[in-house]
Image 1 (spheres, helix red, strand yellow):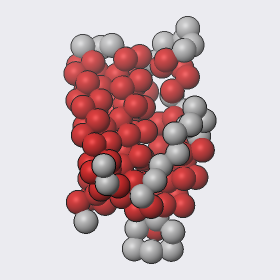
Image 2 (cartoon, rainbow, N blue to C red):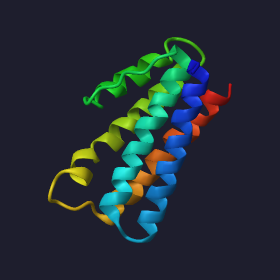
Image 3 (cartoon, rainbow, N blue to C red):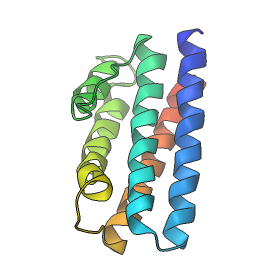
Amino acid sequence: MSALSDARAHLAKAREFLTAAELNLDLEFFNVAASNAVISGINSKDAVCMRLTGTTAKTENHAAGIAELRAAGGSGPHAARTKQLAITLGRLLKLKNRSQYQTVDIARTDAVKAVEWARKLLDGAAVIVAE
């Protein structure tokens, strides 16, 4: 597969997980909604990095993805966008452990924010991948 086709595949996964997040939010499954939003955001990051750099890091340290996303824009035309997307990814990743591993539940307000952040990441990634 080419970097562009990989970017498109990550974008499709991001859409799928965001749809699942939205459905689970409607069902008031807030942990699942936030978890799916996080996975969507990670796939959006991967799509951007694949499109702009031809590679993306596969690591358990998802926080490193924040710097990777910011760096993907370099000093080129996508620098400001990738910086903003990296900030959004950072916010989203703060909910990862709580939604997936901890016994403390995600509140509705946090799940709503997670879905909004995942949407912002997906929309930004879609613009970059389409170019």
